[in-house]
Image (cartoon, rainbow, N blue to C red; front, side, top):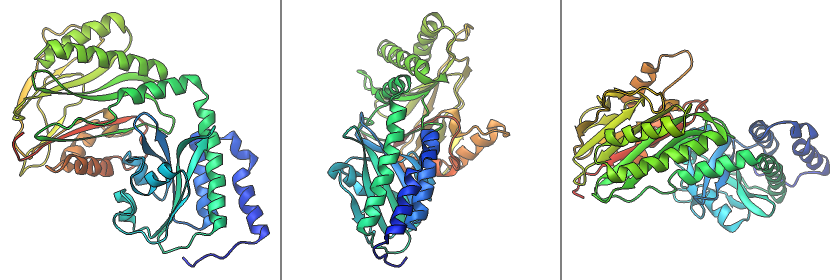
Length: 406
């Protein structure tokens, strides 16, 4: 796009009116973000616009809303403060312009894949605190003017007000803080294994009961958990936190995942009556050659070994937790985990679609899982299966066994 000259007073006024329109205040945060991004794309004549909100617990920016970069949101893209283009804006708390995007100036592969040439980004503030980053981009080289920067800062201020209004809802804020504190901010470095994860809420203000957990046990086994508590909001987040903590405690005294889930079922049935929960608990042996797992009403994980595409693991389907039904005995399954293999755990939001039997989504997932680095598997799966903004939360945990010995 051609370099823009300074705009006139009439155009400047039109721009300001477009982003201070009183009717915008009637929209909720999700709709306001979408409307603002649409308007700023038109006003600045750019190809992409995106909002990344700050996860203060993890000190990472999370792709929350986008126009032209929807893939960034679908993949649950996160970037640490200080890294890449958006991370630099968050670190310096000042506008940043990149007039010629080259490898290394950005860390988000979606920006590179789109072929963006120029970027402009500004920080978002609420009550003097950084809450996120707003950025726009063009497919042709572009020089952004001071007027462009000022307009984008005005849009960022308007988006920040919406985010602040949302955070003033105590129930929402408490649930969001609790949920974020219970998801690992960083997966542990485990010899012999490569791990990656994704969590994408079902909508901008989404808070649900999906969770994942990774921990190293004193015996040297690695524990992997993924689960889904029914419902949404603060209550589900609280129940999820209690279940997560209880399972960690049982994992310390049980070397059989089925036994740990049996104890957890008793706990949920007695203390969390009415909260139906599914969970998958897997343990990877210290030498990384075996996976021992048990499923409580949860979807079967997918295992892909070198030379073959993914296949669901033939784990016994025991009832969910908290149903009140007592199976004769929960069972565990043990499978080989050869070098180079990939193990994928997930919640139903990844594969379940309206007007489609779930087996179709499960088959689609198995088809795209191939032995590869964990982060690459996450990106591939999200790109193939999260083609639309999810209506349910998505949690996914991927473990890749390295070809070298631990």
